[in-house]
Amino acid sequence: MKRVPQDDKEYICDIDLPCFNYLERDEIEIIRSGKTQIAFKKGENLTKQGAFSSYLLFLVKGFAVEQLEGENNKKFNLKIVTPGEFIGLSSVFDKVKYDYTTVALSDCQAFLIEKESIAGLIKKNGGFGYNITRRYCKQNSSLFGTVSALTFRQISGKLAGALLYLNDIYKSYPELNGTLTRRDIASFCGISEENCVRELKSMESSSLIKLEGKRVLILNESSLNNIKERG
Amino acid sequence: MKRVPQDDKEYICDIDLPCFNYLERDEIEIIRSGKTQIAFKKGENLTKQGAFSSYLLFLVKGFAVEQLEGENNKKFNLKIVTPGEFIGLSSVFDKVKYDYTTVALSDCQAFLIEKESIAGLIKKNGGFGYNITRRYCKQNSSLFGTVSALTFRQISGKLAGALLYLNDIYKSYPELNGTLTRRDIASFCGISEENCVRELKSMESSSLIKLEGKRVLILNESSLNNIKERG
DNA sequence: ATTTTTGGTTGATATAAATCAATTTATGAG
DNA sequence: CTCATAAATTGATTTATATCAACCAAAAAT
Image (cartoon, rainbow over all chains, first blue to last red; front, side, top):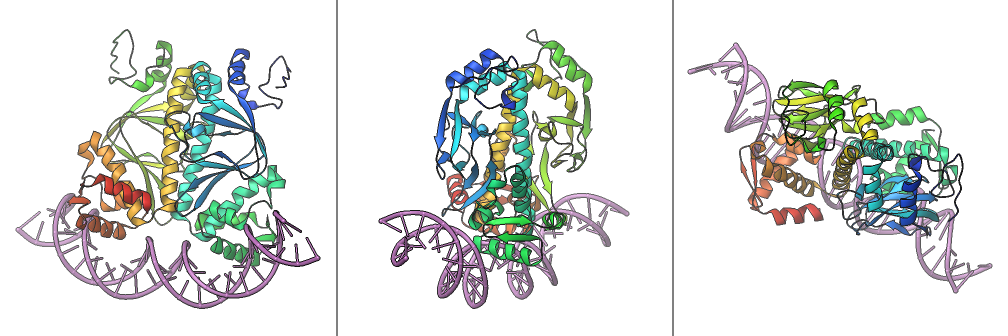
């Protein structure tokens, strides 16, 4: 493992991870000693819903999608995980099993961290805990939005919301646009693939979006925002 | 404010709050100085979705329901808040506005705590932060369950899930059973009031539950659990 | 005690969305 | 390059569920 001392600090890996900035030298050592770096190939599971969760993952490179699995092979996509995010955080405290499945959208590199290391660090180091808690808080807010969408919106609103969410991610990671199938997008909305296609076409004919193969370009963000809010 | 020193400890109020056990004397003082105790009457809002959130609440006495509001006066009930729980925690970190509305189901007593006090304490005191993070973690898991229910279940499954959830709460607080209207129950399921009534009747005629006015008694918990899982 | 309002119930109807089925297009394997 | 498989698309049909409307029972207000 490459160590990169810099600014009188030691880094837990070779990229700068703001999340770990609060940690002291010895604390970084705790994580470093307990962790393993793992490579996942595209399509592989980083976590599996219902499986025992003895560790959590910290995504260093690549992208993954966090999803809930239902009956009949149905999926609901919660979010795209990008580098610098934890996976399985929601299972650290009171859960023995992962709440969701995480599938690699591309080849990934991730650190595997023992759950105990994290729990201990949070107790020991308030600043680090604060950072983790912020992440939970964000996740929470985003879940409220998801519940709201599922309860109150209909197809057009659900799709508009999903496209805007994805577009936000594409702003930071343009290479991701074009990698999701229609089925993937439908699973972000909680609607059927067929209706997803129909609504996409309808939005294209209203000049709200442009479809270029798998790529979706947003032409009228404010209209989409209206659609998202009112239906 | 009554102080009750005990076990060489000071309590932040006159009931024992496990959540605050980790705090030191001076830290308790921080919260105590910044807080106010408020009484809410049944039906009043403890938080209002979209309103600026400068404080969070700690429920000491009474019950409240946490809900998301949609268009056309539609509601979705997320959970029942019982004494010892925080309200508005999800807005402490990155949110300026409350994500949800909280309505008093009975007369309530709550502490109002400045957001800054909590954020500061988490940074300063890891043990306290750990406790707060655990709460977030629980809330998170429960939200995954809600999303899953909304996406994968249909009426019977949604109702079964809601009845089992409520029943769990009634075990600790039997006085709550009989206080929820059909509309309230429907809002816990994300279904219409009419269909909620129909499904309740249908479950009663299958001897899964017994309806006594507003009270709902569960007769066959394991069957309800099956229904919850498979639809 | 009587009226008004709120909550509960039931059946009929409308509708959003899923499913089914068939076809076309794209992608990947040998 | 060709075949096989997966993804995308479109129309027709079914289904689950919401909505509408009417009525009844219970609770609250006058």
